[in-house]
Length: 179
Image (cartoon, rainbow, N blue to C red):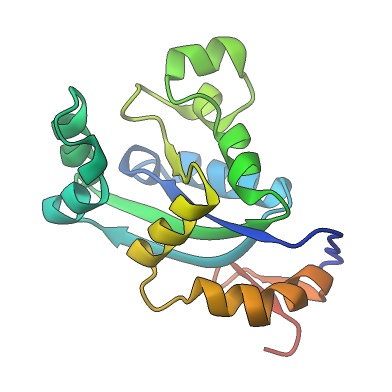
């Protein structure tokens, strides 16, 4: 049982552990542990494998950019893990924990971040995170179409904020006591 208590309302964000990290169980587990160590609530978690068309749809805003094809192919190259995370300032906190997109820069200016410690290249940089609350809602819907963010904010957020909450190791998700 956890004694999480937040003063401000919780915010949701999407976090992805990319195929390069999922291919290495030690790295995948290290990222998962960083999420827990930084007091994120894991609201939903699943492993999935994208088809190329899924990757193209998700990254359509980057079509025409020099890295688009490489990114699309990489993101459909193997399994990945998707998370819905909650915290008071989840979008920014997750972005800070990930570190800069460019791995070389992350190693220099942000050691201790996921990308600074575990990233391989600018494409194989271990993680993805939403860049705004609006993006988080859109991206959560893309990966978790059954999850209703509006409903969660209205009905579940106050309960997760005030607890009690426990971490269900079998599901790798936080749960409300009694559910």
